[in-house]
Image (cartoon, rainbow, N blue to C red; front, side):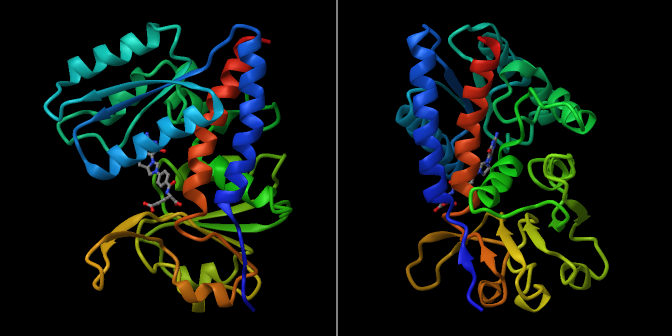
Length: 293
Ligand SMILES: Nc1nc(=O)c2c([nH]1)NC[C@@H]1CN(c3ccc(C(=O)N[C@@H](CCC(=O)O)C(=O)O)cc3)C=[N+]21
């Protein structure tokens, strides 16, 4: 079997076109969504991601606000920047690019974000609401990678109800947040959360209808642990140097040979990354619409 491709690039283009229409409609009513980014330090990877977010905004008509700050910034100075964005009506949502330098308290920073402006969906209040609201529609920003990953499957006609999803990885941005989403009645999946400390990981993976590989460990999902016909989402983002070209490249968590066993697989790059980015825009537009019914 050769798996069909869950094409995140193509789906994200479609969604961007939909968002552009929604933004146009908002602008016609005098409402201008604006996404802020807060970047601390000069990590080339982070700079690249942030630049991508601003390109995405331009594409759909969202204004962008950029705060690039020195590595040496103090907790108090950074909190003051967040307070400014919280108060700025032109900024309808923003993100603090992670990871932050070690001398800063990431949890305290994420809590400082106005939950209404939390475009990443990572504020404790919004993560808490996600856990609490099982039956009511969610009216808060959702964590971008989990929501984007689900959208990628839905847009390919994949039905999640009744499926057993095995998640690999317990990070806040993906592993811990995707379970509460997938187990909502609207998706009705069953979720097992595993991580690098799980004993018997391969046996658990073989029971999965859907594998969400988000441990950040290259190759943690082996082809031999994928049930024939399973759906495989490769969420891992690790970097390695290509021995031939000497260039840095992204490697995922899934053994490439899994494509011979799975029914659907998300390429990496070109799968979850673009879906994460477009979900950020979706959160901004959703919030703008919700606050201006
Ligand atoms: N506050 C915050 N929010 C985030 O959402 C966040 C973050 N911090 N810190 C870092 C991670 C990583 N992340 C990615 C987003 C898009 C791609 C992406 O679009 N990648 C492309 C290209 C990859 C490449 O070639 O380098 C792809 O998968 O096709 C990747 C990774 C968001 N993150």
